[in-house]
Amino acid sequence: MVVKKPRIVIIGAGMSGLVAANKLYTAKDSRELFELCVVEGGTRIGGRINTSEFEGDRIELGATWIHGIGGSPIHKIAEEIHALEAKQPWEDMDGSPENVVTMSESGFEIDLSVVDPILLLYRKMMEFAQGKIIHGNGENGDAVDYYRVGAKAIKTCSKPISLGSFLRKSLNAYWDSVKDQDGCNSSGKLLEEAIFAMMENAERAHTSAGDLSNLDYNAESEYLQFPDEEITIAKGYLSIIESLASVLPDGLIQLGRKVTKIEWQPDGHGSPEIQNGGDSRPVKLHFADGSIMVADHVINTVSLGVLKAGIQEESGMFSPPLPSFKTEAITRLGFGVVNKLFLQLDPMYEFPFLQMAFHRSDSGLRNQKIPWWMRRTSSLCPIYKNSSVLLSWFAGREAVELESLNDEEIINGVSTTISNFLSKSEHKNITNLSKCSNGNGNSFTSSHGFKFTKVQKSKWGTDPLFMGSYSYVAVGSSGDDLDSMAEPLPMISDHYDVAPLQILFAGEATHRTQYSTTHGAYFSGVREANRLLQHYHCSVFSELQL
Image (cartoon, rainbow, N blue to C red):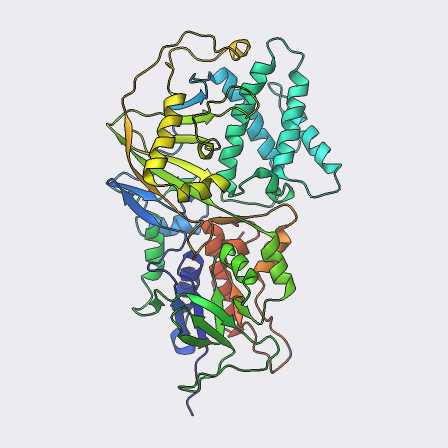
C-alpha cells in the first residue's frame, strides 16, 4: 500500500502565500514529505503587489513602500537580488520631496509660517496616539498639552474612541489655548483647519480607513514598523514576488483557479471523497470552473474583504460556516479601499509636490466647480523629480467613486481642481491670517498651459479577488481580533477522529502589529509555514518577527 503524502494547498499567490510556499518547499526533506500546490484565482502572481509601467515609467498600482529598512526581510531580499538600483527611474525614488508647495483652495500658496505649526501639531498628536510621546518637553510651546487634553477628554468616554475623535478634540484644545492671542481670528482658523484636514486625508490613505472616525484610537499604539528610512524598490515590488516564486517548480503555481467554497470537518465526520480516485482528505476545495481538489491542509491567504463577503453570502464560502469567534473578528475589523491615480502631463512642466488645503463646506470659501471626489485628496505630485507622470491617492468613498469614472471625467475633474489651486501666482503667499477672508495680497492669474492626456488607476475595491486594499482596526475591534484571524481551524486536539490544522489563515489582516503592510503579509506566511513544519516535526525558520 502506497502511503499518501500530506497535501498542502495555498490559496493565493500574493506575498503571504508565496512566502509560505517558498518556506515549505525549501525546508529540509519537505519534497519527500509534502505535496504542495498554490492556487491563484487571477491571471498573475503578486496579489496586492502589482508593478506596472505607465508612459515609460515604472509605477506601483498596489504596495509601494518598504516601511522601514532596519531589519526588514523585504529589504534583505531586495538587497540580495540587487533590486534597489535601476537605470530606469521609478516611483518615489527621490524619497521625501524638497519642493513641497501647500496651496489653498483660493489659489494662494500658504506660507510655511502658517503650515509648519499645524503640521508639527498634527505630527505630535499622532506620536502621542502611537505611544511615542508620553511627556512633552515644553520646547517652543510644545503641543503636548493640547493632545494630552484630547486624550483626557476621550478617556472619560465609556464607548470605544476613534483616532478621528482624538485628533479633533486635541485640535479644539489647541484653538481654545490660542483664541485670545493677537492675529487669531475666524479666517485664520478656517485656514488652519484646511491644513489639518489635509493631514487627516493623508492619514486616511495611509490607514485605508475611509473616515478616521472609524479608526480605533487604542490600536495606534500597538502598530509597529521597522526603524530607519522608508523606501521604494527600484526594480519594482514585483521583483520580490518573482524572487520568492523562482525556487518553485513549474506547475506548482496554478493560475486562474478561483476557489468558491471550502468544505472542512470540524467534528471529524463526513469525509469528502472524489469519485475518480477515491482520495479522501479532510478539506475539499471547489473552484469556479466546477473542478474539485482535496487537501490535508489549506493555507487561506485571501483578503479580509473577500472573507467579509464570503461569510455574508447566502451559500457561504465555508461549509460548515466558520466558528463565531472567527466570523465576529472578520466582521469587526475594518477593510478599506485605497486607490492610486496616475496622470500623464503634457507638455512637460515643472510641477511641484502640491499639497491641497480644501475648505470646509460651511466656510463659504469653496469653489463649487471642484468635484466632490477630489476634495479629500491631500496631494498631487510627480512620481519623481521632473517626471511628467503625476500621482494622487484616494481613500474611502472617493476611491470607490474613482473606479466608476471614465478617463475623460477624471481628467476634467483633476484639471478643474488644479487650475483652481494654481490660478494665482506664487509670488505672494498667504502669511497674514487676518487677510485670509477676503483674499488680500497681490496676485495675478497664471496661464500654465499644461494638460493631462492619459490616465492609469488602480481598482482594488471592485476587483472580486480583493474587494478592497488593506485592513485596519476599526472602532469596536482590537488587536485581539487580528489574533483571532490567525487562529487555525481546527486547533490540534486530543480527538483522534478530528484532523488538525485543516484551514490555516495568513495575510496582512492576520498580523497583530504590522497589519496592512507587506511585512505583515510576509511574517504571516512564515508563521503558517512554521506551524505546519512544527506539526510534522521539521526544522522551522527563525527569521525575525515583531
